[in-house]
Length: 150
Image (cartoon, rainbow, N blue to C red):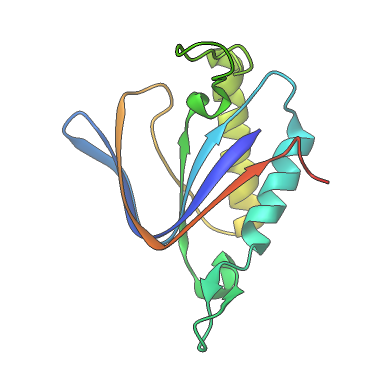
């Protein structure tokens, strides 16, 4: 499972003309799954996410977690995180989970993250053509792959 975390001042997801989610001050998380992912990957990532010290303290040093700053989280499914660019110029998505499995993993990820975070998570709309807007704070962007824990 791969995630991209962006520390944001605000972020939103629009589907068609409808804004389906928006947050202020927190994390926008893009999340993609592959066939080998399981609940252990979800548990490890969710614990990592809520403990990351990427928010500034009074001295402007990134020493605080999302919980400590009372921030919000927006999670958007993005299968393209597992795109391969090794051969030619056409992307291959062979490692990405099929849609039915990916949607189930996405929902489990959100449920587990809400449990670890202690509050509701904003979400995109799985499988929809979404317009994601954000103001990246820093900019601070982190990529985490549950297959590379060591």
